[in-house]
Amino acid sequence: MTASAFHFQTLNPDTILDALFEQGIRIDSGLTALNSYENRVYQFTDEERRRYVVKFYRPGRWNAAQIEEEHQFAQELAADDVPLAVPVTIGGKTLFEHQGFLFALFPSLGGRQYETDNLQQMEWVGRYLGRIHQTGRRRHFMHRPCFGLQEYLLDPRALFESSLLIPAALKPAFLHSVDALIAAVTPRWDENVTMLRLHGDCHPGNILWRDGPLFVDLDDARNGPAVQDVWMLLNGDRKEQRIQLETIVEAYEEFSSFEVKELTLIEPLRAMRMVWYLAWIVRRWDDPAFPGSFPWLQDEDFWRGQTATFNEQVRVLNEPPLQLTPMY
Image (cartoon, rainbow, N blue to C red; front, side, top):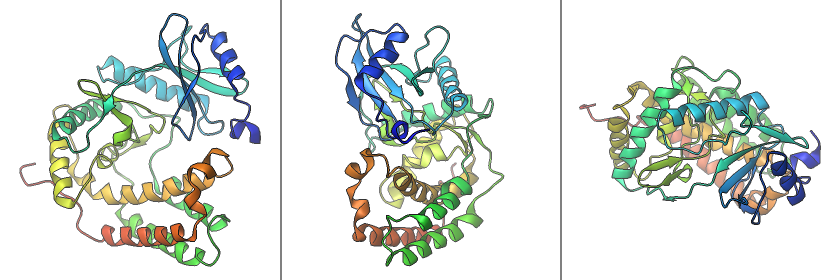
């Protein structure tokens, strides 16, 4: 993989038009870039006035087999009446290649923003998560990875140690906070937890509302514990989160059994997400899109704040985990 491919520098409008033309798609509008840091995503209208989204996958992130598993999962979910964006099939394929770039087409589906404080909408989402996981339990991803300590904590720790983005004077304290977080998460992580195919990144930004929820972006789909698709929907103080959790779980269990013991993984998963997300930005820093989008990463105050945030998460990990009321 060349540096230019990594930076998407060779993915210009002509390249995109040629890639689409090869699949019989002729654009009748401009290309509107949509918000995506990891991949490059564009919306357009074809000559028959059909609206599409084309996604060009970041080279080196997922291989073809891993992307095809994602597409197969989406097709299974759609067949089970889960509302989500499903890749378009052309000539029996959903994944295509042009000049070294893997890409896929999706119908352009609009919707309103999911309301994170609306318990009725949250109930709907919980019900569909149960259906997603019902499908996800049928088999495992064979090519995509599982949630685990190595990818989400240990590999990022090694990256931070070698990174020149972290100010030298602040790095010892920052690494100490990462080590403390790893030490707190490790005994709380259950290697024997039941793994299933997940959405993987089920935060409110990946849910649209169209007379019900519409799930988008399975780019982070992988094997993991069911609670991974639940905890990112919780917000507010502990009392509010408990009400939300009970709302989601009651609806979820109309289709899937929820393992209450997985609630002990909420804060470990949150810690893993915090570390992984920061490492993702550091890892992508050579992509020109990242310094302009995350300029605060070069400020000393950010790293002081991040150290404090990790230390606070260690404190949270030592508190009793969120639980359901006895009626569940």
